[in-house]
Length: 394
Image 1 (cartoon, rainbow, N blue to C red):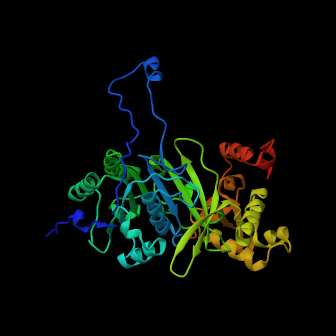
Image 2: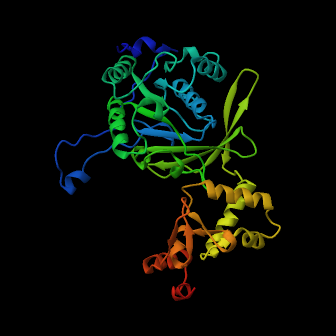
Image 3: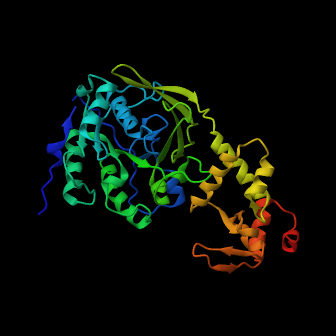
């Protein structure tokens, strides 16, 4: 028996008055000639948070676990309802906010909000928290209608979903599934409402960088968004966060910058620190060096040879850690075959067919590799080689 859920009963009011802000959309009810189209008067894009969160659009805030993304979404909501600049830098417009938090316990959300501002209960924020109901699915007609009703009744202009994976029962890796989920979210947009979605990054693999490709799930998630913001903690100081806008449909991406979480006795604040200067770790530098060495040796290279190339610049333990990471990363473009005395040979995936030899698969079956001219052409392009004949002779 399904338990009836009334989201409005669970909306916790935190009060003040909101301002009306009309979503910028122009409906064209007929086909137009290019001349007629160019005569249309389209309004300039407004921003709920200047440069970062476009009004009426979908913004995705994505990061690895424990990157303070939920905390930051609550802080941004507070700034918007208070009409104060986000990070003391980005102007915000004052509107009412609904936070649908399906990630965190109510007690934790309460402590966070109190640490942002003791008087936050006077702000026009409404919260739906996971401790109120066990099941939530945006495809559930009753649940979606309740959200739409709250938006209309309270004149809400920003809805925060924390997180994407919690609001549906679909497969994030399938574009067809995600299109269905975002069709439901569009009904929220149609009420002149902005949507901010908290999302998760994939687990980092070998030589991976934090960017749009690091976002989990189908590429359609990135494609549907109007703005994509990626968070990455500093390697040495976990209170410093790199903020990168990977996508801005309405203009140029804002340059990457750093913020710092300042923890007081009973208060937290986020301070703008300027342009991003986060330095790569020793591990990442080692990965870059080893990747370069493997690229320079398309026929493949052993651990012993890698160590000879590197010399004393990188320790043996670090090299071994990198090679283990390569071996465990199923998505890596670097593969392994076995050479003399069963030694491991590391090579770039697309170069395998250049060098006739025996490769052992996961079941230890042997597969003969043959030369392929189309792949040779790809390699010539990748490595900027003038002639492919040299490689054929190998």
